[in-house]
Image (cartoon, rainbow, N blue to C red; front, side, top):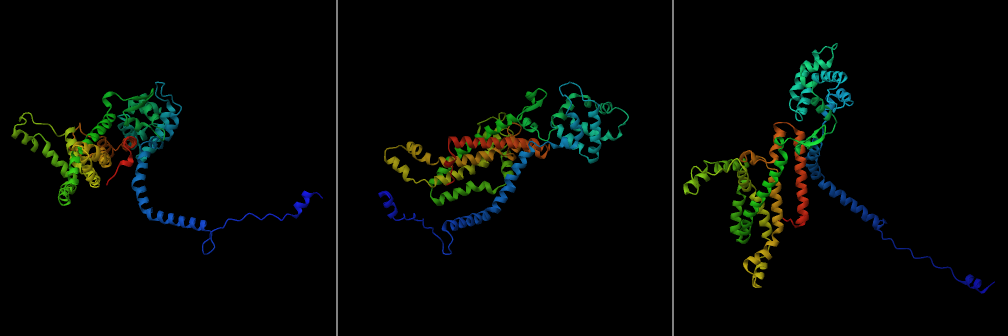
Length: 434
């Protein structure tokens, strides 16, 4: 036996490595497991507390937006009302310049018999009338006479005898173009475009209105926001600088418009701004304008800007006041003691601290003004209405909910885009309400 073997045999075995001590609770449960269970219970308790609010937000905010998104592309009425016709039209070449053959007219007759009995052909006509005028009357007229057609005679000749439009290729192009379950037609109309056999094209210049209305809405909303800022900033500065007793009294005057109906305030501006109104009478009485040169301040953009600035001004003053109230006057005094003039102290020291209030007030006023439609409808005339007025019109009058939904989606997208731009330029973290 060698020396090395002797030493190895005589050496004692090595001790096992020490095991880490596991902390446990009183009942022996590992502390890590117990903490995870407690954290899960806290999360579940918090979730149960906010569940009613979360459900309310889903039902009143998320669900309507999702429904609006769906309505802006939904177009199942054509395929559901004329299933056999849609299937027969699949093989028809719309660029051939000729109306489809007898099998398509036979399928149309079979579908119209069922649709006329269920009274769904009128709804289909109303839907297609949004894309091509005259489709509503065409389906109403044909639906009344579909059950009197002679099965022994060619259906194509009988349909054309009812109305010549059935022999027009454009009628069948509209039917085929809007036969899918989903359509981009509403969004194309919302941006003054249309689908043709040659692809997507702009509508004729005399039919383009929505892009112009979007641009006008954005311009007027920014103008109203700027007017509110110019008027609201000195008012908020005065309220923040005055003693509490006086500022509280003046704050009541700022909040006073909230105690008056929006309709009453808007109607009051109609009385004030019209050519025979109070303001023009005062200007004529003082000699600033002649009786023949009375100012036109109503039923135009001027009336919209004035009325909406008055209505939205408190939404600018309140955030500004709440931020200005937290600014210590010692900062301005310190700047002046170091040699700064009044203007320098204000611009370099005071104004930067009010930027969060400016951001909050500007966002509030802009978002509220971009969706207003009552005031522009009453005082804006034809040149002062917003895109929201057209959305309200399509919902309540023309019943073109698909186009209204598409316009609403585009308006929402524009607002989100402006939020993104604002966040990149100013920073959403700089927005404060006090």
